[in-house]
Image (tube, rainbow, N blue to C red; front, side, top):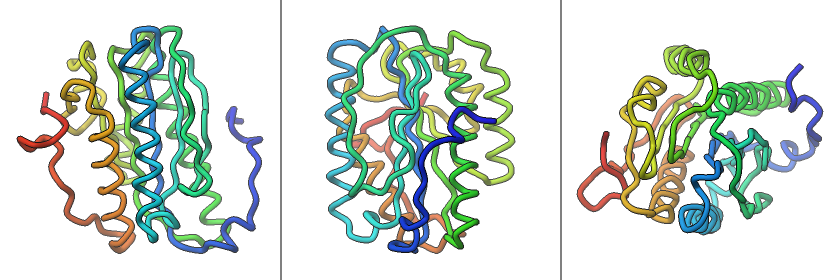
Length: 225
């Protein structure tokens, strides 16, 4: 049994809003090295994320956001639509159990999908969006295998973003996509892009992905690594 099996669930949420769901799981590094300005900007970015999602009436009904932090692994927010989602005030501390966070995050996604199926709710391919400024301090090879398996089966899409100091060699082994490096501390720009991308997806068919803006374009918030 997962640590998250006992989370409260109200089927009325789906009765009131039967729109297809677009899951976005944020895996956020809150280890001690993120303290200070990086975490301040990350927290500000989460507020921007909510505001941007709420500004799109369809995305506000279809997108569901969950936040899991690592340092240690904690489920901060289960999947919620933007009107319910409250950006947390994250605090830093501990090491970087990235492998455990990824595996528990994938489990959380699958549990939510089961809820959709039980209630006849269609859903898009979920996004797992991880932000870190380091490398895993735990055994991460099972997480890398789970990501590759999930990507091959098209059960989710995994994106890795490294802040300055991130171990990009390990991120390249974790993700089937090229990891991105955040330019400076442009977290707010990152979350504007992420909300815009989810808005595009929420307007497509559930078996499609609309055209997304390249975050590594010259004016973008990221650089490829």
